[in-house]
Length: 570
Image (cartoon, rainbow, N blue to C red; front, side, top):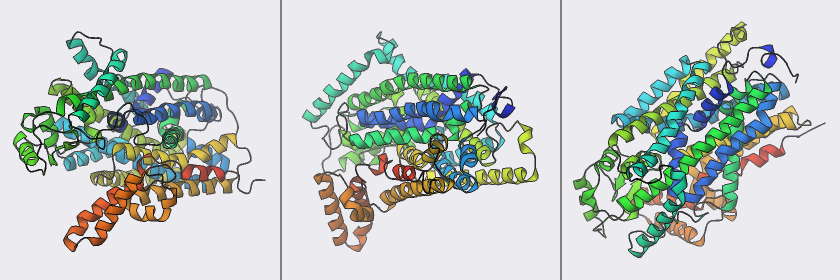
């Protein structure tokens, strides 16, 4: 690959925006709607175990800046598919293109789900209507928007995203006359959470199953699993056009590196606000909801419950009367709410923060608008980069010289047709609620880490890698990872029975699975549906591959892809 000097890669003009604009846009892309809702909810629910996601987010930028972006920029290449095509030829590019389409579809599903949730909170629409509106908006924006315009929009959005994370925590502190920077009082918040957890256990308002110690690591994930999760998220991000395109199109290598460096600083600053926000959510649930009478729920909670986003005592919290009746009908009716009787989806935790902090509903609605804009911009950027990668046009559709030739026009039409097909398909999948946002993001990034990252890194750093080896790396890595995702999600009992020797589940989880299996075998016809649902739920807890759970995957495909780099090397 030949290096080029001049105003931009290959002698063409550069991206047309400053490193600061590119960094703001890249940071906004990494803090998309799905990331804001999913990662904040995961941190609030899992505590220390959720930090692996933040480590992967920051690590992806660093890996991209150190290992990939400088070489793309120096060689005049606009994205990972151009790199694979230049280094390994047509068949490897076709395989990488299929992987990129699959990864984009999964990540697009996550962004559409986040956009639908935010629209539902902001407007009061039901989830089906909100998802339909979200799909229409993304489809129109993805087909009409330019890379330059999307970059400018995401650059403007970053301060709004930072404010949405920080203000719900800062405003209550200002009102109480305390320190307005939550990072300075973070230790006090964590200590308050730990003290409250002990009190709730003593009062039997929580049990060790529903209440995992917030500051105790490796409750939901093993140390190996945490490392693999961080590595999968980092490698997945470092191999995707949504992260690589803007810095790769910088006018000089210095500007490319500066864009990545500024992005890393901005993401770090946002992450410093993410953890206190999650801790405030956790503290608010334990102190403000647990121990409250069922008939005394706040209006903000009933509003979220009316949208189908919060359950109390097994029913949607549409009204105080409905909650009181449901709690009274339990086998052990509570006088006050216990932790396991409050079911709040992780994707809704961020929208609960203003209400838990005593702020007015207007703050929640403002946050929902910001999250909706972040999700819409991220989904649009996904569609734009996918179209331009598949057509070999990088991210500058304004460059008319790249449209020469009839074959280019045909490919561009096919890419647009793919977008028209992919967006509704992702919206339909999101409507089935296949998994939590963090799981969807982990699935998409793990597919990229297994199918794209090995061949992208080999193209730059492995001089003896061959086209045949690259093709096998892509096919093998993504096949094993896809098998693991599908099998553990939809065929968990069969997967566990086949690979039980690799499971590291505890004795209690295995005993629960065996009891559920026996109950399903003995169930009468009218009970088999419920027994099967219980069996699948218990099977997902034990269907782990060498310490990697279905929700924190990443181990299976990536090494296999790496081993194929130099197959039949000269």
